[in-house]
View 1 (cartoon, rainbow, N blue to C red):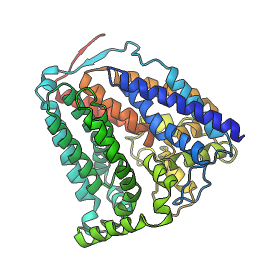
View 2 (view 1 turned 90 degrees about the vertical axis):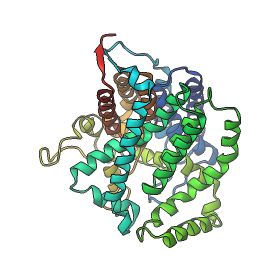
View 3 (view 1 turned 30 degrees about the vertical axis):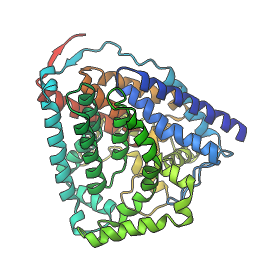
Length: 428
């Protein structure tokens, strides 16, 4: 079994490397390219780490660690999904197009409007989170969202905007509408803002990817800077959860923030702080595959297949309040939170698209998941605008750590963006 799993892991890794090369060489950036890169990062890299270290070590959630000599289910599914995603052509099937007024794009009105809206929603989200009054970052965030429909809607919209803004900046940099200095300052400001007010480190990753994909504009020394900074970034990423969990516990308190940083720094001297497996697993959020492995091992032997409830029905009906439809499917992450054994109210865990698709469709998810994502890719390609396509790239990439509701909300946000840009419709 170990030999079979190693072979499957190497197949997945090879397909991911091929997809990464395609994304880098491809002239156009699209949702589908983001899907390929997201799969390679959030699924392919953890699979490779499991083959190198023999397991994906996880210490914060009481579930079995995925091992290379264990059940081959997760390796079979990921290899099948990787092959299907790699083979599906990155083509548009000819749906009607939505044309964005390019005059709005060229004079940077779109960028200014988008950045101002993101900033306003970020400030509102931070104030409504209750962090200024103290408490754990996750609990404060959850409490602020309960019973506040406006806060929930703005959170969903802001979640899309914070991932897409770095790639909108990338579009303007490639078009030489903003300078390299403005581009880099914008990325630093976005990453810093998210790290401080929301404790979300994945935005820093999207900013790094945006910088790396500016290969036609950023000098080669930019890659040298990334390579030199990579060990520092990876190490900082591994201790950031400690800082995030402590920094707002007493509200806006500089002494508490300093104590959080000191505690995280001391963690580097411990065995866990020096464990290269944990450091790399944190960098690629590899623990999500432990959840996916748990799903594949328990569906349908212990739990019945969801038959599309969370993967199709919920994304299409997420806007309906429970008062109208009490039985509306909840997010799959909440289900995983309960199955994890952690007694944390409202805890949502991620198993990437791999785990949720398998819980809904079983082995058929190997085909169903790529086809659903390919269908979404065609919907996003309806927007006949390069700037919009850069934004959808971010949606395709980040979707692997959320669920399909994220992509549906992105369609709504982009439609609103097009409306603000004075759209006009035409047939292809």
